[in-house]
Length: 440
Image (cartoon, rainbow, N blue to C red; front, side, top):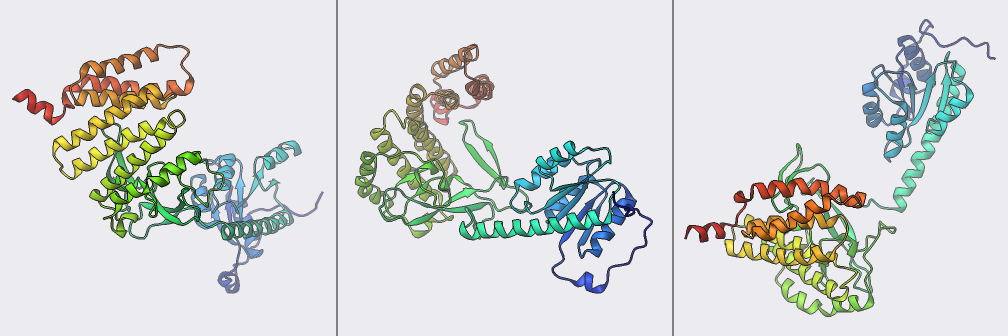
């Protein structure tokens, strides 16, 4: 056993020199310790080892500091209030930016070797037992810096080999763009598709279970994502709201919809017809500046492509029926925003109803309950209460089925209360044309 004195707060300390303070390449360390004397003494030892040290006595601040400073080493007292060391290790390891942080746990002296090994297996870089020794702190800190630097180099090399999956859109901080490739060309030419950043836009679902983009979150730019939801190839104008039809070079393991040679040939053959729809589209159509009238064209292209996919894959791609129905719902919403005539809007609702009615009887699994809700909403909209009630009754009977699979029951329990509320409030959701007809 070493005769070296343990760390305490009564040791003489020397202030850091100006050379230490100004050194640009100092590794960073955070000392999270509840004991004031041990925290002060440990911090001083690390400063003498040329660390830039941030003491922390509040466990609630520890993760925030780690994410802001990205230290090479985090000394953490396992009994520190306000922090769970396992959660701390897990959170830091989960994010690429904080993965180089090496967590050194400070534990009571009664912890045996088996327990310490278990803590290392759970992600701790090292375990130190009280009373802490100078040499042990210096040695583990040096090893942590070496491992942290190596981890940073590995991450940097990986980023060089693999470019970022998504890039920011300069004109709108609520959007990201990714490069994808249309599968219907022999020579791959990438183009941009747009995705919505999580948490940037406040949304709510309308009566037809369609997300409506209401306002930006604090510090974000507003964007109505509906016009950008359709991905359109600028060469053959194949269009879909589903990204699995487009290959992403940065996601080689992603799951893509299988496309048979006959389907691919049918898509290519119909490119001439799609060109007529897209002939007048300007260059901005393929950017984040796509307008509402241009978005209508995009959904028309997507519906035409869905019809081809469905015709060639009547049993394997029945999901396209639901996509057609939801595309028609989005078209109705866009035309409502553009103050189009009610007759035109209701025409899209009617088309959606026809497609979703077919989808309900041909699609299995949890998604069928969303379709049932939409059929109830559309039936109420058109005053077809008998039809709407039949779907509601099917939902109620399904809820009584003890053999219903777990994933389906979860979806059913999400939608059944909404179906019941829609039925109870049906008088509030009628088409304006229906109200006009009753008034006449």
